Structure formats: C-alpha cells, structure tokens
Image (cartoon, rainbow, N blue to C red; front, side):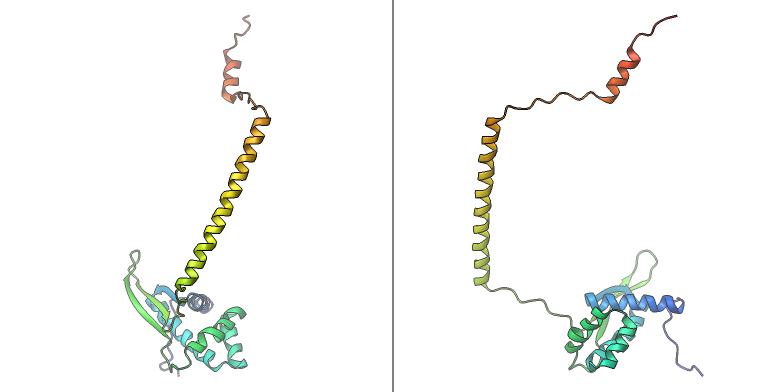
Length: 188
C-alpha cells in the first residue's frame, strides 16, 4: 500500500518534474539563493537537504549518488568541497524558505529558497592596500597621458606634411533618378 507516500508532483510528468527539480538544484547550489513559487521551493528543498547530507559524508558512493541526481561533475565537486563542509556542525535545516507574496500575473505564491549558511563575502581591504592601489592608478594615468600627448604630436606632424584631402560630393541616388525623369523627351 502507498499510505503517506504522496510527493509534490508539481502538476508535471515524471521526466518533466525531475528536469525542473534538477535545474532548480543546479541554480540553488550555484547562486545559493533562488526565487521561485512556494510549491516548487518545497519540492526542491527535500532534494537539496538530501544532497547536502550526502556532501557531509564525502564518500565515493555519496559522490556517485549526487552525480546521478545532478549530472554535473563540476557542480558535484562544488557541493562536496565548499557547500558540504559549511554544514558539518549542523544536524539539519540546511535551507530556508522565505515567502514573498503573490505573483502579479497568476497570483501564485512566490518564495525565496536559500541556503542557511551563505558563503561570506571577502573582508574589505586594509587602508594601506587602498593607498597602494591609488598610487598605481596615478602612475598608470600619468603614463597614459604621456602616450596621448605623443600621439597628438605625431598627428600634428603628419597633418603638416600632407595637404588636406578634398572629398568629392557623392551623387545622391534619388537626385540621379530625378534628372532622368526631368529630361525632355523627343516628341513624335
């Protein structure tokens, strides 16, 4: 019997549902946060939590299982090398769903599905490093100004040597046609 075996089918065929969930997982692990409908987020959350649990184990069998579900070697290595170690001390609850409200077009409930421990951004650079970068920029700007001045002086010399080229006015297409029709024809 199938008691309590219901899954979120997202009103799709099996292959279509699997492809949808796979693409959502790829986006989730790549960008660490995705915006989608609430039902899709709930369906993807189940698989994401299973994959992160596999990443915490970090065995060959776990990698193979994740690869069979995701189908991308680079993403599997990202999952096992970066995302899995972040959740070593956490027993569960690797993702969170934040409700956003209703979508304007079809009134579907929207949500953000994100990892609970998002990779932190790099700390700001120290004041000394900023000063060094400013000095380097000033040096490069001074060098660029010298190059521009040299080019201008070369152009001035080249202009003095050659006489200016006078361009002939181009004959307009319609002007030529008008002349054809303006000619007086031989009368019979």
